[in-house]
Length: 313
Image 1 (cartoon, rainbow, N blue to C red):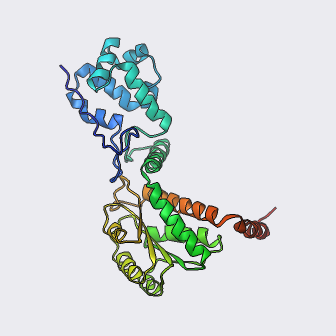
Image 2 (image 1 turned 90 degrees about the horizontal axis):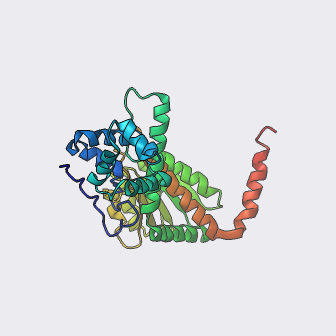
Image 3 (image 1 turned 120 degrees about the vertical axis):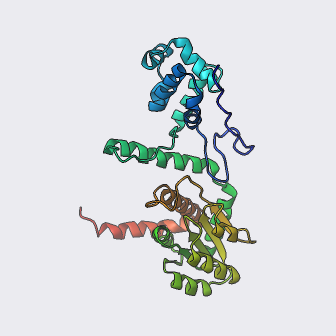
């Protein structure tokens, strides 16, 4: 008698989406099967291992081929699907194929020391794609609406928009300033803690400061955020929802654009988090450009014309 696979926890907000909210965690079909692998009978374990080795192929192969590759009978393949909580092979493959078509990898796969370049391509790209799709499903549209409105109003009123970040997030802040200044907006970026404190001290009501942090624990950014809050500026914070910096956005008038992901900020160079932060900046830039309207087009066209002179024909 096989042990049934524990049901995937579903919150009301996550029902129908396949993702959970808040922490950004996601329990996929194969993550659950991998966890329950030791409890399955030996024959069903062989089916599970075939699934884990190539889930995309498993979703498309007929039952006879699955049985041959697993060295089990066709009824064993069906029993495996029922053991892990599905009505049968058709039900399991349908839901598995849905995940394939969505483009989300089934398992968050860490890089191994013996991985070849081809393996690295698959793992790094799959993890990035998964993180982007999860963020697409979890992002709070109302928070982006408030942030875009505040930034666009600051741009129309010739107020200041500043971007703060340190370390890797400082590079994202530079990218943000590079995008926003082309919209004809008064922008600046600071990655030095002392300069951030001085710049925050000069902010006024109507100004906006966008603070970017992966960990949300930088003392420099927390200090700058507190000064900007006291000066009456609108603070837009891009960080993890459970971080100390996110608490600043709980005060009235401040905005949190939560970016949650499974990447450990204490290990190695940030990859997925940086991509997500850059995506957030792209969304904000696009939203503000749309709000500022057709007046931008002549200036952007002139910029393009002038840049052509810097390129070889």
